Length: 153
View 1 (cartoon, rainbow, N blue to C red):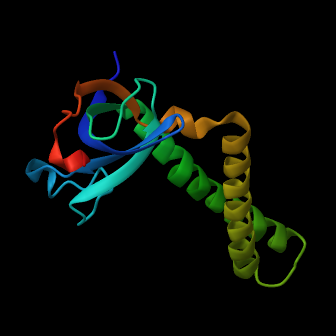
View 2: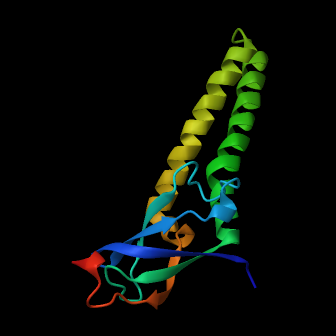
View 3: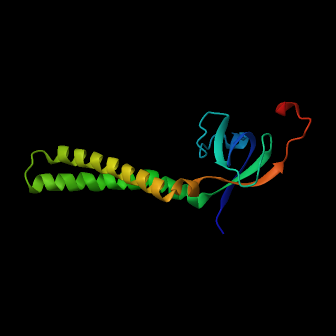
């Protein structure tokens, strides 16, 4: 069984099959920063509305921690690895063919490798719709809005 992160938020906007949810930072996680909130006290996130939530609902979101690590690896580690591979390949080619300074060729080829890697990741994400796989999912409506709630008027 995979570990999951649960957050509770309020639905602030509904459009088509999406909902915008406001999530407030807990006092217990002030020093962590893993959620990406930084110094902000709250974050707004848009997710698919699979449960039919309406404006004002309190909802529970779930994200598998394994998916967070996969996304971080895809966005940070793979481009870094490709930059190093590009650097050493460019430096090696420059020395083999005596193209001047191997250091400059390595830096340029490393930067080209990073740009190409991000282009491939971007294309792959658009083609395979991977973004949805890494997004939090709406798993429960905790409390529906009350009809007389002044916040909804």
